[in-house]
Length: 117
Image 1 (spheres, rainbow, N blue to C red):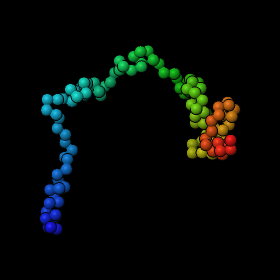
Image 2 (cartoon, helix red, strand yellow):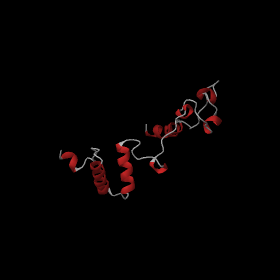
Image 3 (spheres, helix red, strand yellow):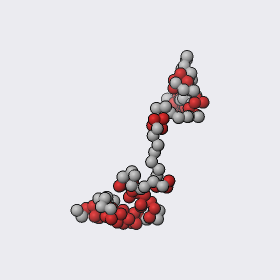
Image 4 (cartoon, rainbow, N blue to C red):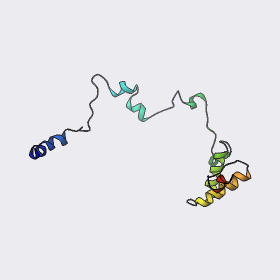
């Protein structure tokens, strides 16, 4: 039994998939997606996308937009990102608390004051 198991092992190990896939008979990759590979690699404007209907996104704060354009959480996030040194979690908590209190946003980080109410 032991010798038979060892002799069968190379067959078992080589019986797995080879990594090569064969296309389905009669179907090209273009038939499956409805688009050629070249058109997928070089996309243009999507006629179903919002930009085709005239949508233009609002500019972000770095492009002159207001931090308030996307709501109070977005404003708080941008204030923290611009005010706190990376990695200083205590400062994030304190800055969020101060900004939220100043603008009466009602936001908190889940720290001490969240449990004291």
